[in-house]
Length: 86
Image (cartoon, helix red, strand yellow):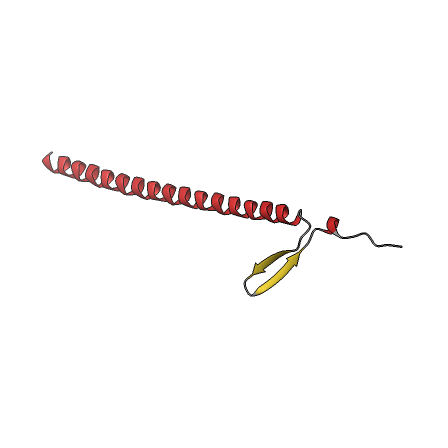
């Protein structure tokens, strides 16, 4: 009888350790997922703000330089170009 009680106690301890480990892993995964979500939301907001600023700048009918790595491009609003004369 004592042998069975020892086995049962051992199995219960192992079960508690496994449940604790799985719970810790799931919690850490959810924390990482939350961090990634916040990062993606911040990046999306940054992209949106960059486009809003670009549109606001081109509405002034002046060239707006855009720099991407080693390249530069000037953007201008086509509505600001003079219509062709006939």
